[in-house]
Image (cartoon, rainbow over all chains, first blue to last red; front, side, top):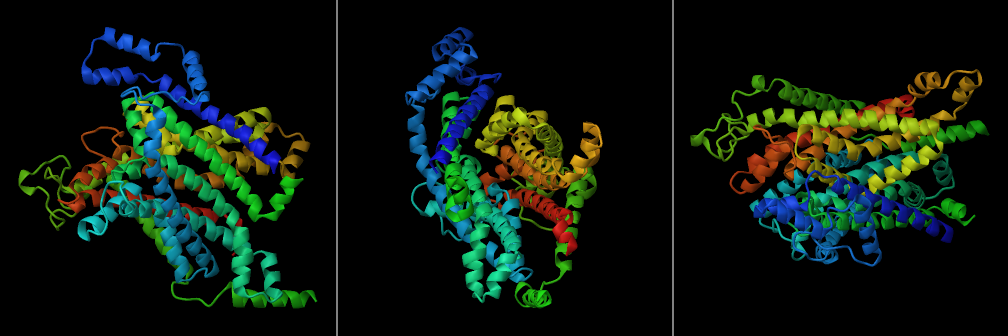
Amino acid sequence: MLKLLINRCCTALFVLFGSLLAVFSINYFLPTDVVDSLSASNASNPEIAENLRKELGLNQPFYTQFSHYIIGILHGDFGASAIDGEPVIDKIITQFPATLSLTLTSILIAMIVGLTLGVLAAVHQNTVIDYVARVIGLFGISMPTFWSGILLILIFSISLGWFPAMGSEGFSTLVLPSITLGLVGAGFIVRVVRNSMLEIISENFIQTLRAKGLSERMVIYRHALRNALIPAITIIGVIIGDFLGGTVVIETVFARKGIGRLVADAIIAKDLPIVQGVVFFTAIFYVVINLLVDISYSVIDPRIRRQIGR
Amino acid sequence: MRQVISEYKNHKDVTILKKKPMILHSPKFSNIFLWLSILVIIFLGSCSIIPGWITPYTPTTMQADQILQAPSFKHLFGTDYFGRDVFSLVVYGSRASLLVGICAVLVSSLVGSALGMIVGYIGGFMDVIFMRIVEIIQTIPSILLALALAAAMGPSFVNLVIAITISAIPGYARVMRGQILSIKNRPFILASRSIGTPSYIIFLKHILPNSYSPLIVMATNGLGTAILTSAGLSFLGLGVIRDIPDWGLLLSQGRNYLTAGWWIATFPGLAIALFVLAVNIIGDSLRDYFDPKKRIE
């Protein structure tokens, strides 16, 4: 177990460094920088722009800028926004709770709907339940979130007036966006769980359990589901990672706070330190979630536990 | 004894695995969906090729006396705040939306699978480095990566395609690499190698024909994803700016008029959803078709 942890942590550090390098290079080789977007609004002359670049260290070579940045991070300093000078870490900390609560509630909805429907669909293959689950799965992965979100706003806040259409204060603003996102997640989970359950149910050991006289419920929920959970957990890990960094569209639709909006605005304004900070932040989460996923494999599947123990 | 067991198995098969059929239990049911999807694709495809034949109005005509009209027989999807016919806008907007998606899928599936095949076939150090790079790209959520690239390169058709392509390549490469790895050590490949067949012939004649099916399925579903991503970027204001807006931009413009006219945002989104749904249904059917287990059934 310890060996797995150490191994994974080394890989994680490497991946984090790589993603920082990737974002840094995308931004470094941009044709325009933050000074251009600042001076476009102030219409300042090129001399001032040049001075500003010098001050921000933007005229230094790539490796100098990058090593400065890395050394800063090692000291816990993520730099400051190039536009208003506020520390990046402060901005992320104020925006993150909104994204985190949205991600958690959506993933909860996705897991409840996805796991239940996926199992039911596989157990009752080719019945109405199965077709409903498959249709929900298809709709979940096919509907653009910016459309289903707008439909929910039209129905539940404009026509019925049940929930507010925008904002990020309080629980009621969380309902519509988390249903929108939860449906997407549920779509992916239903499809994965249904497929893996169908595969497991047709295996020999399930026949054996039935032959031993176990009740159908024990066979399905105790034995089949447990075996079918591994692909489900993999996809849930991927979905959480995607939601955390990829909520930019949904946060725009519902005019919510959050790191998705933060990074989208920063990308358009060429505010380099914020983009790097947020990507680094989401990459950390991605790596941690993947580590948790790997550990949960060994909790669920004794075979994997034994393999690691060896 | 063996006969008893097999009889028992068959008996069990009948009673438990195949529960009593209910309505909709017919293989034709999913076929109906498949044919509907093909019809949707053909219709939306022809919208993008010959929009003038499908709608009587031009999308750029603004009729000042017909602002914000609800859907009717005259204006199927209603009119927007400039008095433009929303149906015509959706029909004409299909070209921009579909073209970006199709180009992005073609480029990313070809480049991605070629990369995956090469590193999978050669293996070794190159494979390790490549997989690390793929892993790094995948830590950045794909919409964020596409957003950063699109913003970095500026709004143009080619840049949009490149942005979506780069964020999609790792997926294709990963699947193709896995496919090659699972095939390249099978006995028939080893046998072919042992009689002295050159590498490139093994690759072209044995490995390639045995590994393209997941690529086709993935590219079909990938078309849906690419169209969703491009519409999302347009929605966020990073799409290509033309005189005829694409579906994503139409939707984001209609969002400002939700209380005045629900139809402006609803119908472009419906077009996106229908197209992606149809593509995904076709992708699922292709996967079932290529799945040897299902074919036996």
